[in-house]
Image 1 (tube, rainbow, N blue to C red):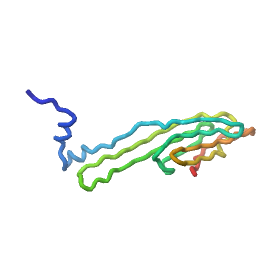
Image 2 (tube, rainbow, N blue to C red):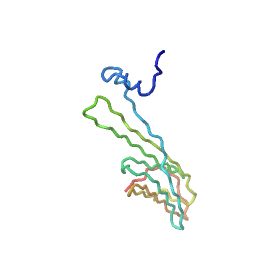
Image 3 (cartoon, helix red, strand yellow):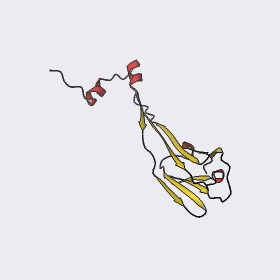
Image 4 (tube, rainbow, N blue to C red):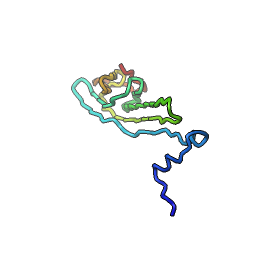
Length: 138
């Protein structure tokens, strides 16, 4: 009777060196989307995203017309000097928000502080031309 191949026995039988080992290395992708709180006052709209453990350089905020797209990307590499294999941890996400007509996207500001990305979009009573730009994160 042949023994069933389990996850554990598969790992034991995996070669440590050679072409098979290189092909066996994998890039693990974590799928998650950060939680967001959206509030509005008479002066501005505020979007707060909970993104702990990331740095300013991991984010991109892009505005096209009244569409606000916030994305994040992070890749970690575990440097193991005493082992022949290592795994990568890669996470990438994107959130989109449709802004109201009175949102002044040209004056949008973003801040990253204590694991929270805060985007402030002022309101304007003037007619605002729709354009496309990236928002700098302070």
